[in-house]
Length: 564
Ligand SMILES: Cc1ncc(C[n+]2csc(CCOP(=O)(O)OP(=O)(O)O)c2C)c(N)n1
Ligand SMILES: *[C@@H]1O[C@H](CO)[C@@H](O)[C@H](O)[C@H]1NC(C)=O
Image (tube, protein in one colour):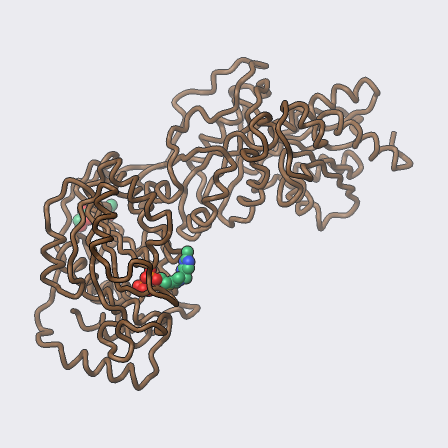
């Protein structure tokens, strides 16, 4: 076991016992099994490694000292504010593709990378993922196990560090490696049990031929090499007291017999094709006629896969990735979404069937929180297109927009608003209805934009004129267009959205004008958990339809002396 590895894990580590159980595993992976260029950790032909039990980050950093990529001295700044060596792995380090630390997500990401390697890149590189046994209580691990066997990811290896202990309690299966083996086999994996501290056994198991995804079930001892802590509860996440650390380091150094022989990893097979993700365009312009009714689904997205898999597919810029599902179901993947942001991922997500306008399916499937969710993600862009043309533009723009992109689409058929050659930009709103006599600026998106346009026609008959704005992106929001137009309507703004009040369009507009003088803002949104019904009935009951807009506009004007 390489020297820095042991010494550094013990000296500077927040999780020494979690690192000690994987010392031999990491050493064998990095100096016997994996093929990569240590001087070029991001090389596209390298084998990939994901430390799913991210709290063992010091083990990963130590191994990169062994490879020569990091300097030993850098380890001593671990977790300090100026250091790139953070408490858990993040892409600030070149040898990390995706952030880990929120347990249970690494194998899903590894699946995305292995899928990409096998089916898109068609390359020799393999993907290795190291998991903890406590971590394996997370259901997402088993979703990934199913995914890997379903897609026959024979280029994927999961190494399970069965050290018996979790954080405060033993892991449920303790040291019953036979049970792990049967579970893995039941999930369609080739499962090999090894002594995780035997370099020979690990080398042998990791070099076996494979026709399925492979699980290396490594029976280990948590805290191995720290006599007082070996296999004992109560030592998780405890840095060693100095005298104990000194004694352990002394013992390790005494055990090093030959340090003159340097180990080098095998070089990768260079069969990974270069790809360029720049200037990704739709093959053709949107082909809709004006006023044509289009059911607003993302017709160009075809992958419906877990977020972690998407993040894996997007890693190392191998693919432009779209994942789509009903908007409501992104809520269950919120942890994966926030980790995608930490991972600096460029995944694109399409959430269809947003809001109560899905109608009959009822509140179980109504996504009324998704804008709040995505607005809170720092790297996110939120597209909220309102017709077939703007949806296609959003899909196209998302391809070249950095960070997590979210496209919110609606179920009802709605007429086409824009010409196929209309130019769209991130952060650029469209004024879709206006006159010189406008009194209120109404902002809606998706179904509520169409309601606002209908309300404009109705109010016109009463000689009340409103301006209607389609924000197109909710984040970033085009504050400039909103403020300029609202000034022309004496600062009166009405927002209307198919979303709960909290965190949606209305609050985004509030934030945009919060430092401006002379604005009056009214908001229409969904205030309660809705019920089943016809979309139009629900829009009416929950007060976000054309009639509700007309009423609010009249009220805003009657409240002010110089309304007309
Ligand atoms: C989703 C999630 N829940 C809880 C934690 C807090 N946590 C950090 S390490 C740990 C114990 C993990 O046990 P195991 O996977 O067996 O790893 P070990 O340290 O024993 O190798 C926990 C619960 C976390 N990081 N992520
Ligand atoms: C990967 O490494 C090879 C060999 O050093 C080099 O020729 C190639 O340019 C590298 N590829 C990338 C994408 O960095």
